[in-house]
View 1 (cartoon, rainbow, N blue to C red):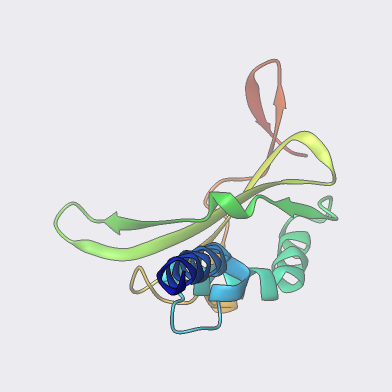
View 2 (view 1 turned 180 degrees about the vertical axis):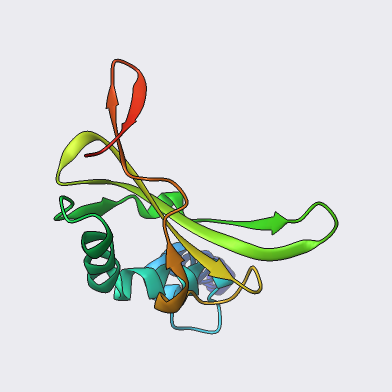
Amino acid sequence: MKKKLAIIGTVTLLGVGAVALSNQEWRANTIFATARDKQLAWLKEHEKQIVAWVHSEYPKIETVQFDWNTLEVVPVSNGVSISYYNLSIRGKFNNIPETRITVDFRLKEGNDIPDMKHILTNNKPGILKNGTLYNYE
């Protein structure tokens, strides 16, 4: 009986632990946080400043609805070596489903935390019409 209870207790603890570790919100401020978790937490924390910057660059964009699952960090190369890394996050804006926007941050290393000093948009915001993406005017 004791052995059965010990096994059930162990399985329960492992299950709870797995669920807790898979929750990115919880992991962001722990020793289990990955670079992606920390970057995502920073982006969510600075969402208002990012949207304000987008609005300053593109005054017709009032709101941005980020898709947090699109966070991507890729190396940028000059053909010989990696020059820097680009962190990007995509979303829609002004609550229009056909719109597309990507906000980028330049990073020295792939696991760095973004900084508002290095924010940019590599591509202009667009709107999808008849299968073609046009610049949003």
